[in-house]
Image (tube, rainbow, N blue to C red; front, side):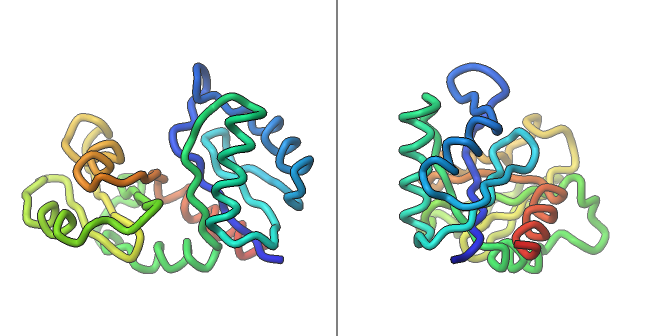
Length: 178
């Protein structure tokens, strides 16, 4: 049995993508996931499971759609994988960590599209890529510049979800704690 961190894409406090975390924990437990626990209200779930990541992603997505009514992408990572993403962050020294964002991909982006994005100038924003991840440094208000999760999804043609530095750090820590 291993701990998986399930990142739900697009959870909102109200509307069609509303996912009450207490209800989600209850439904996950009923479905056979062990020790479901959530972190903040924006779609971060940890479960103990024997399922491979891809199977857990499908099962949780189906469960949320059928029992809660939201159709959201689910991206699974282990705590070790989140720690590797944090270690790969190129925006550490001299950067305000509250302005660093991590975009986790559901599938690998096409290499040609990644190279195209890297050839562009987003100043003062910055973009970098690592395995299964994009790193964004957005010094101004989020949504006022070019870089965002929606921008990367559109340009790369893939599904992704974004978390800030504090959330990623806490999820990696929770993954270590088990």
